[in-house]
Length: 188
Image (cartoon, rainbow, N blue to C red; front, side, top):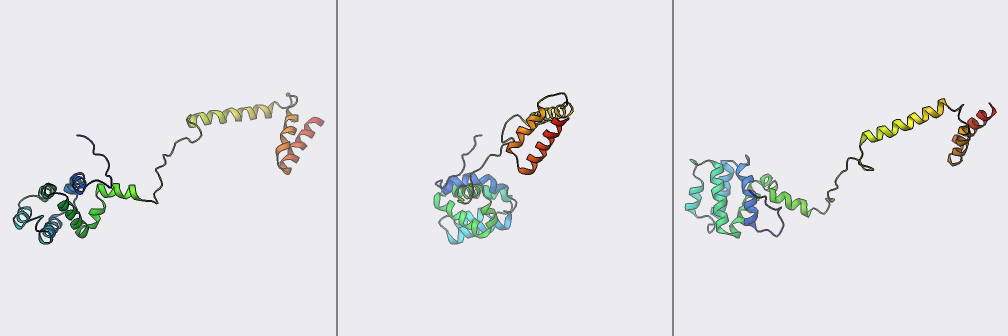
């Protein structure tokens, strides 16, 4: 069973009805009363689409509603483009919520909505694809280097001078603290 391509606005009403048939046959909102309203609408307003004899056949309550609706849809597709278009008009008139939830209407609405932005695929990791464990490993390494620097500063010469050089690009308060720390460690 092949997949049908998404609905395009240039598709005919018969093609749309073919795509919507499965949805319509299984929608619980299309009960016996609603299907009868659709049949009567097509019969009374457009007797060339649905004659009295055909309407009586499709209104037979001995046949389950989904079967009657399936037969009606097949019959309308056989009648042509005009019959399918009038079915959509009747559906829109009597059951608007079903009409707007049809697969072809949803495709049409999504494709023609000028306010809808193109689908942006959200990436899990925007800057890299290595994941959270890589980040935790790098963070752990940096924390380890900071501990090493803090506890071995007395043994490492020039560490305090590096702090003094780092102070050049900082704000005034941070710069004063780092320079004070550098001067104090040189005095020791």
